[in-house]
Length: 324
Image (cartoon, rainbow, N blue to C red; front, side):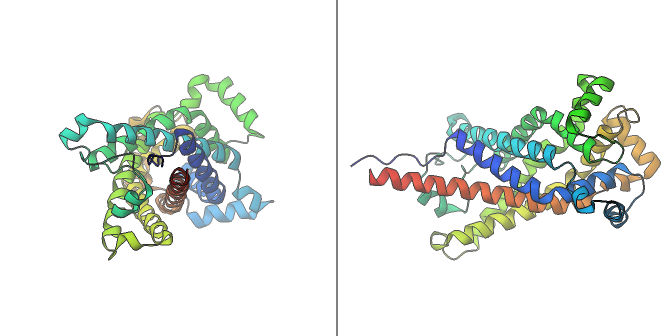
C-alpha cells in the first residue's frame, strides 16, 4: 500500500488554469471593456451615448469586440502569470515557520492537503492565510504580472480607443515605438500598479473572508455538493470585486488618461490634479459602473473556474495515488 501523497497541483497546471480562465473572461466581456475605455477617454459622455455611437456605424457588432486579440493576450497570459505567481507566494508563506510564529499564517496550516481536508474547512482549494498575508500576496502577484504585461495593456487601450486609427496591432506597436520610444509601452504603469496591486490585495482579502463566512452559514460544510462550493466561490467573487473596484476606480480612470493622452498628462499626480480641476472629482469615477460590473463577472468567473479546475485536478490525483 502506497503512502498518501499531497494533493497539490503543479505550478504549470496553475499557469494553464489561469490562462484558460483569462481567455474565457476576456472573450466574453470585451464589449464592456471597450465601452469603459470610450467613456473614460471623453470629458463628458454617457454610457448610452457611447453605445449608440458605436452601434450606429457599420459592423456594429464587430466594433463592440474591437481589441479582443490584445485583450485575450493580456488577460489570458496576465491571469496565468498572476495565478501561478500567487500560488507560489501562498505556498511559500504557508510553509514559512517564521510567518507561522508571528501569526501571519496558522501554524496548523498544511499546504500539502488532500481534497478532503480542503473542503472540510471552507470552499477554498488554496492555502488558508491571514488577512495580511492574503492582502500582501495578492498585491505582489498582480503588480508583477502587470509589469510583464504592460506593453500589451497599452496596445489594448490604444486599439480600443477612438482617438487612434490603428489598422492592426502591428501598426499600433510600430507607431508607439516610433513616436514615443520604448517608454511608450509602459505609459501609465505607475497608475496601473497603484490600481492593480491594491485591487488584487483587497480582492483576495475580501474573497477569502467572504468564502469563510458563506461556508460558515452552511449547517454541514462536509456534506455540501460541488455545486454549493461553486456558488459560494462565485458569490464571494462578485462581492469582493465590487468592493475592491469601488476603492481603486480613481486609479483606473487616471491610468486610462495617461495611456491615451501621454502628451496632455505628464504623470499620475499631474493627471489627477488636472482631471479634478477641469472636470471635478466625478471624473475619477468615470466608468465605475461598467468596471464594477465587468470586474464582478470576470473575477468571479475566473476565480470560480480556476479553483474548480484545481480542485478537480487534485481530487483526480488523490484518487490515482490511492488506487496505486
